[in-house]
Structure formats: structure tokens, C-alpha cells
Length: 596
Image (cartoon, rainbow, N blue to C red; front, side, top):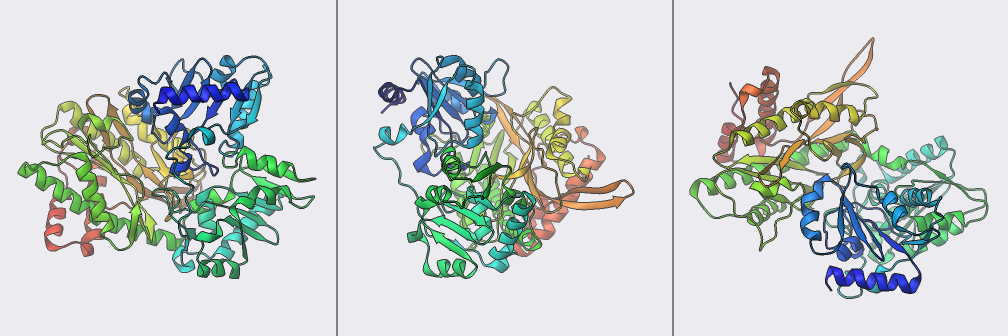
């Protein structure tokens, strides 16, 4: 079926059901960012494959909202579909709620899949609809429409991380959660996010592409802990280990029934952005149960890495850095020798280098290898048949990462492959200046990512330039490559504390020309304590050379050049034991001190 045919079929089903509109978010029952293929309903229905987007369909119109990372991609993929692209955050573009309120009739009905629509989104819609008395109904149209070739619900084998490798046991983590429950005056916590369950249970699987999670929920009560999971995919030794630590395994499908059967008087804590409308309604149906909304405490607990996690993460980055060195050596060799290579081949070569390391069991996301103008699409994906040839001029942007048994990595480097325009060199230098500004930041205790985001962008803002995404995001420990609540963006309100990790990845993207991004990971560390309070900063723990070929050193300060030279000296020290003599010699040249 073509997209137009799918939309027509949806409208026919809407007429039969009595719905005036349908709301299709990019989500699954756990509000996961990178969805299992079974729940990629918005992508199936619209043809737009980016990870972020919301599709709304009425009988007369259809529209899709996405953010600046995907404007170019969405415009191309929606062409001819009849779906209007709504560029979020741009002047004159209405919100989803406003558009639906205008399009739907007085007293009309909007259908949503309650299992895949979070409470926060549902409440925003209900608030917007109040004046026109528009009703929100829980109904899944996709199940009846997407019957051919729909991927099954994943159920890969679960495995447990050793408590020593995780730095804390499941009972220790449960104790932390119960303390949070007490602080929140709650008797129980419903844990819905997959990364939260994975951290709490020290449990991993392969249900989500490149994200080592198992589809599961967890209910932490005062005297019991229940893990709702497909038991058939849990090996006996894993089950026994969990049960020994006080965790009872229940069927995944029993989650809603368990919430309906909560003891009278129970105060249940839940996260509106991470909990489905369906599960909240189940809990609200239980007699004399109070549902209290708030943030998921596990998200903040796991964001602050313990000593073991940090040491493991650093080693993962050493292994990753060695793979990146070998990749750049091969890239340079091929370019210099005039050997044919395209974006897809480059990405596959880097994949092979990572997976050659025994402790690397997967990528942390699909590699972005984007040459020339393709790099202007922040989340570009090269297909085997459509990949652009890499030529001996311009930039190649490579954004990639690995899932190692001791950590998760995310890194971007932009490589100059030959002659560059002055505009390209200037863009590269400005991006590096932004990168260094965030990496060198020193800030007062209580400072959030909003402030550091401004520090990173200021160099570009002075020239009337910017990038349509955040400067950085948290990274999980053998977990999701995107982790919250910490981050570097205008929306990041969580204060940084020592132990938090975050990426530093400013960029410049000029459609039809080039894209530049430089990304490393940072750890928040103490700097000093004075009469004015505690001050924190960052330690960079990505170990990979930054290409100095494109730099216009006249645009850089002495402090920035010193930072870059110090960084490259650290890269050499950290990678030395992992490289051959030939690789060390190459790295020494790549990390040579920069001079004006």
C-alpha cells in the first residue's frame, strides 16, 4: 500500500468507528525513543522514518510535526503523500493541540491508542479540547490496518549484568527507590521506561534495536517488587537470581490487572511522560487508590554514574577510540590512493572495527556516515543502493557509537578529505570553538544544562548562526544512547551534579552544501569549593583525535588552542596500550600540537 492508500483506509475506518480525527505519536507502550519495529506505526502510515514525529489525520487533512533535525528528510519523504509538514518551533507553525482543536468539530472525537499515548500528551490534548467539548477515545486503528508484514512484538533472551560490574546490586537500587517513595509520600512506584527497568534490575536484552532492553514493567512497593515480563524469554538462572534478590516475576500482560488490584489506600507514584494513558486508567479504576504524578526517580538515580560505572565507561571509550583511529587511518589511505568508497561502505567498515572487539555486542545506534551536502541532514542514513561516493574534497561527517559490556559510547568526528572552501573551514572552526566552550565550562552548583547550552552557542549567535537541536544529551551505562533528565539544551532544567555524563555536540548545517558536527562525551566533576559555594566542570572522556586540517587558527584564542593540544596529548596517553606501532605513529602525527 502507498501512503495515500493507507491514509484512505484509515479514514474509512474512522468513519465506521465515528472518529473525527486520529492522533499517531512516535511511541510504544514504554514511550521509548527508538521503537521496536512492531510499534513504528507513524512511520508505516506516513512514510516518514525519522525517530521523532507526530501524525494527525482528519477526514479532510493530514499533518506531521517533527523537529529541526528532520526538516529536510521529512520534506523529501512526505512529498506526494498529501501530508503537510509542520516544522516545529518555526514561526507560524501551530502546535499539535492547536491544529487539532481548529480542525475537529464541536463535540467531536479524537481517537488515540491509549497503550502508546502517554498521560502528559493526553492531558495536553484534553486541556486544549475542553472549550469545544472534544472527546478523547482510546482506540487502536493500526492493529486492523497493518496486518501484512507487521513485525512481531520482540521477546529476545534476557541477561543480567553482574552486580560488581554494575557497581550496585538490585536490592541496593531498590532501597534507593523506596527512599524516594518515602520522600514523595508514596507507597508504590510504577516504572514504565525500559532504561529505568534495565538499570533497576541490572537486566538487559535486545528488544529494541541498538538499545539493550527487555520489554517489561516494574512495580516497587513497600514490601514487594514485581517485574512484569514475558517469562519465556527469561533463563532459569536469571529468574533464580532475581527471585533471590526479592523480585517476583509476573506476566507482561498482567500489568494493567495488577494496577486494577492495588490495595485500597495505596498511593501510587507515576511519571506522566513515561506512563501510558491505558495503565493510568487501570490504576485509577482501583478502589481508593491515589495516583500521584511526578518525575521518574530512577531516571535521576541512574543519570549519576557510580565510580565503577565511570571507570567502565572510560574503558569502553578507550576501545571505541582505538576503533575510530583505525577507521580514520583507512579513510585517509583510501582517499589518498583514490580508491572508491561510499558512505554505506564506510559505515559498514566502522561497524566491523567495533564488533571485532569481543566486548562490543552491538552499535549504540545506526552509524551516520554523511558526505558533503548529505551531512546537512542531522540524522541522515545512507542506504546501500543510494549512498554517495566519498570524494577527495569537502567533509565526511561520521556519527557513531558502540554498546560494550562495560559501557555505551557516542562520538562524532567531521573529516576534511581534501580542498575546502573558506566557508567550510570557517564553519568547522566555529563549531570547534563551541565544542571547547562547553567542555571548558566551570559553573556553580545548581546550574542546569540551559546555561551551558548558551555558552556553547554564543560563538555562533554572534554571527547570526545556530543549530536546530540541543547541544548534548545524557548517555546511559550499557543502556540508551540518549538518556535523561540531564542534557544541554534550552529545555534542560536538571542541575548537573558530579557523575552525570553528557555529550557535547554543537554543529552547523547548511542545506545543499555541508554539515559539521564535533561530538565527545563529558563527565561532570568537582572543580573547587570556596566561600561562594561549590563549582563544577567537565572532564572529556572520548579519546579520539579531532581533525585539525580545516582549522582557521586566526579565529581561535590561545586558551582554545591550549585546550585542543592538551586534549590530543590525553588521547595519545589513553590509547597508547591499545595500538600497534604503526597506529601509534599515525596517532602521534594526528595529535601533533597545533601552532598558529
